[in-house]
Image (cartoon, rainbow, N blue to C red; front, side):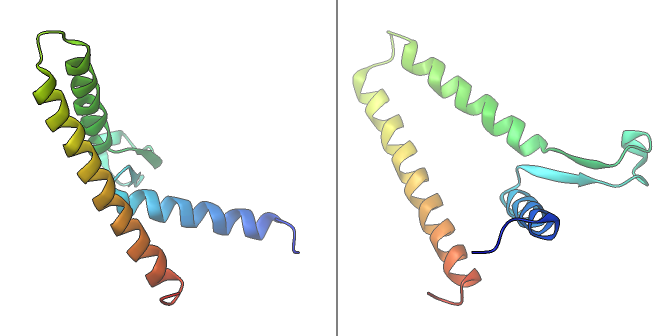
Length: 101
């Protein structure tokens, strides 16, 4: 079994960045982008920040005792459906990367 030398670590990092970019969790900032004052590199995307904020709001709803049990059940079903859809998407991407295995 081959060890993880510098070349392998770089490949793993590139692959992780590509997947996170595809998911919309990170974005690349070019040094030519005047919005960031000549800085460059990777940063968390605004889409990720928005999703975290929405998740926090949903979690706060669970703590609220005035929310009915039926509403909480509907919210849990939405989470389950979203997770199932994300899992199917990830499985299809993995199969495509591995040549349909």
